[in-house]
Amino acid sequence: MLKAAAIFPGQGSGYSGMLSCIRKAPITDEVFGRIMHVAKRDILDAAEGHAAYGLNDPVVSQLAVFGASASYWHMLRNKENFQYIAGHSLGFYAALYASGAVSLEDCAGIIMNVQKAIESVSGNKSGLMASIMGLRTEQVEEICSQLDGVHVSNINSITQTVISGWKDAVRTACSLALEDGALAVKELAIANPLHSPLMNGIEDVISHDVALLEIREPKVPVMSHIDSSPLDAEGIARVLSMQLTKKVRWSDTVKAIRQEGINRFIEVGPSDVLSRLVRWIERDAESLRAEELVPCQTS
Image (tube, rainbow, N blue to C red; front, side):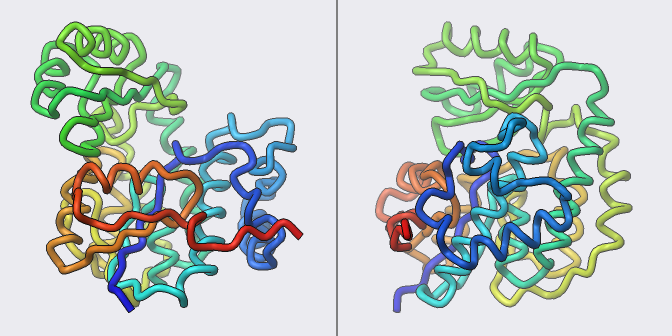
């Protein structure tokens, strides 16, 4: 069996109806039941597009993507030879669950606590994240250096970079990027300046919650999306505490896994955001998404 890496997507991969192919699977009910026991909210209905508050609520959206990824993981984990695991931003929590390092319930709890901390640090300021396509990261860095309140937050590939900051600054940076030749810019449905120095101060708050977690040594190596190194339990705690103030270096993460002899990447979660990125980062790698490997269960 070919060696593979499981990669878990972030919040932007969620969409209404994301469980359509796996809703009838018993494991989906089990996973979401455990998450909802922690959250005290109907995350399952929201993921299906039924709940009134839906996926516009950031906690609901994050827990729905986390639950979808965890459900897909249970369906795939014994069908593939997973040698490495990595998560993109929010996907880090699903990666930790899949690796056996943190329980499902603890992951759900820390997701909720982190969102409270984000809102506390951001205060009344309006944040925004946006994707810039067609410029090299160095060009985007130069644009951000000319402005206050905006930073590069995700380096997804050579020519796809995400910026994060206060709303007006991000929109100004997007306009400058288009003037400099960007092919497209897209505002993301995330209202906080995540993965940037603007979140400074959040580490102390999150560190307190992380210290209360039971973090075990991962059964499958987890590659850090911050510095592209394999993480032990201590490293996991460190990344959990600091990740919202640091860039997501996804391109480097994929390359690091590839250098370990892994040529098969499987996106474990809804949508195909990461699997498409892998094709840009490592053109000769095999890149698949869970929906291609898990039979659709409609009855």
